[in-house]
Length: 160
Image 1 (cartoon, rainbow, N blue to C red):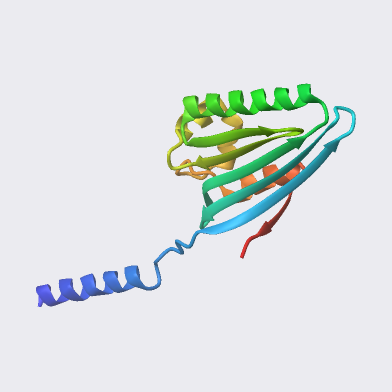
Image 2 (image 1 turned 90 degrees about the horizontal axis):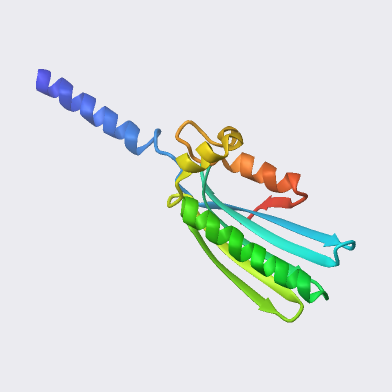
């Protein structure tokens, strides 16, 4: 009798695990775009940010930022800034893969950030204000990242 009860309980637990209690593990994407024309500094920035997430947490982000200017010094400055910024972030926290390309009157950074490879504990320790953007498991919340991009002026929408 006890063995039958244990077996029935085990089957019930497995049934809940397989049906009603499973998480949606579907990878979804939000795309945010931003165009910023800075007439005073003589450049235009066009950016696309793809937020890849499961449930409420960000898994990765892919960005493309293209700066266009007729001023060669501005292109060189952005090229240096992109390279310095992303190499320092990768060295300190990990998870970054990037490429910076310069062509005539533009420079483009293409960046992939894998949050599973990033030291998020160290990042939050160094940047305590990010704690509000994390859940209890120290995972980045998609809603907070989207809010950050929108605060910069980006327009975001769910990708199909």
